[in-house]
Length: 431
Image (tube, rainbow, N blue to C red; front, side):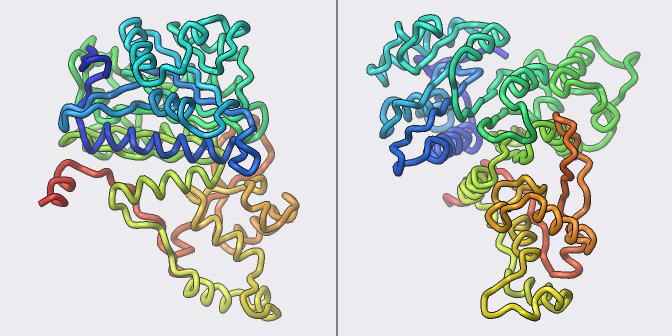
């Protein structure tokens, strides 16, 4: 799609989409860095890195409100240049478009003159600034990035159209060598509605798999979707006569399942910049607290109700059903089976869990003991085995909450689906 600029800022519309997306990213970046760097108690000394794979210019111009805000690359640079004790924070900015790259350097010079651009453009082994600038194609840039000692890292894929599955796999394979290893998170931007409404010279996905009925433009879009998923398996579920809304939901669900190959938690945050337009910012993580914080922040910003099931009422029902676990407990003591179940209900995205989850280790140190409790929860119907296939062919069993049983036995409902803030909602809220 053609790029538009306002000064050095890339020009986009959508107060409820683009600006909110930028706000969420900026908030999450600071939270993520504060945790992964070790925080103020250790003077943020642990190595961390933001890797912007589609950095653009660092600024975004919002047409609707005639204002310029920081994009994701801008937020990472701002934290690096103005945050406390950011000496061990690395910022890696990759932008293949020469026009965007030139403007990015102008924005850096204007906003953060302390950043030495000449140093940042040097080869990795000569660069002493902890800011790295690459005007390179993705594959070439990633090979350069491999030479950098990144530490805990957040990679942001923010393409003009869509990221290829090959690109996702290339980064993931280079970072995660063991089962749901922490220390790497992805954020991936998806222009969800474009796949079904089209945009400029990009044709919408057809409603049939019969290639004889497709135009050349539709075949090109199907091929791009194959690259997005890294497979053709998606076609039978999305190239159908179903409504656009249903197909949009199916696309995100199928993509989410693909990402579970590398990440235990995958959280798609929906944004609605214009009527009938929808995109998603997808957070991929193996760290429970980061996912929960991001979801809470987004929910507060968009007016989505918080997920706060009634602990007291649910526990009373649990206690009646499982007296053998509770009859000997006193006061506020709770059995480990309950504590694990409640943590999964309230803090695990999609209700996914396994014995290696770090937060469950705070209840029982031994993964073997945690596995025993998870199996008990499965036998009682609260959990079912997940069909996710991880990247490591691990023998660790994964589980997911069985919401119908939770509703029937404990009166606990699943979280409501996240709804994006729409222009109409924003207008009504101002009236």
